[in-house]
Length: 214
Image 1 (cartoon, one colour):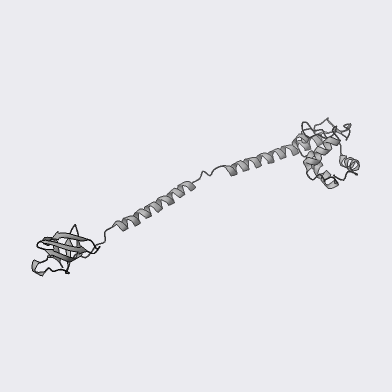
Image 2: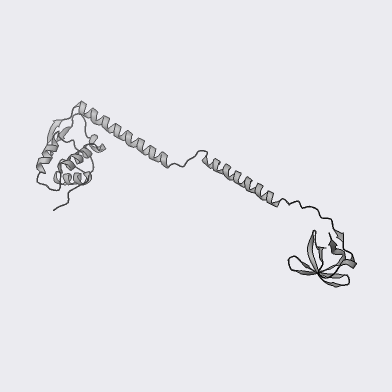
């Protein structure tokens, strides 16, 4: 069994093949006689691939197309399935077709405009808002970073030079190797040369004048 033609385009192509003097799929269309649906239904009654419902939908699709509406002009003749002239088109029919065509074209034009507008990139203030938020984030980050860099004020410790008579191996002292004194433990004494072990575990040699006690 042949498959039923489900789309209007497929059915119109089939009608153009069977009734070429009446239907066409491209170029100028010809006005159809009133009541042509009944004639088609009778002609295709034994055709199992065409249902009346699909046939009615296909005719509606065909007669609402722009090229068909353009063919409805006053003084033109409607045709039957064999292409013979039937009734003449009057002014009222021509005006109705012209009005329907205009409305359809306007509707199509409005739809296209809306589609294009929907695809246009947004040109509002959103990018600026994002930039503002970004700037705020940067400012906040800088403030946090600056606060971290801010030196923590330590309580000032008063140091006094250690007396040579009081130094001994194993004594905990302060040693001045840079800008700030560091905790250290005396590991060796050789005259004025004193070896100390810092808190980091490193052993350094310094002079007695760089050693202090609190």
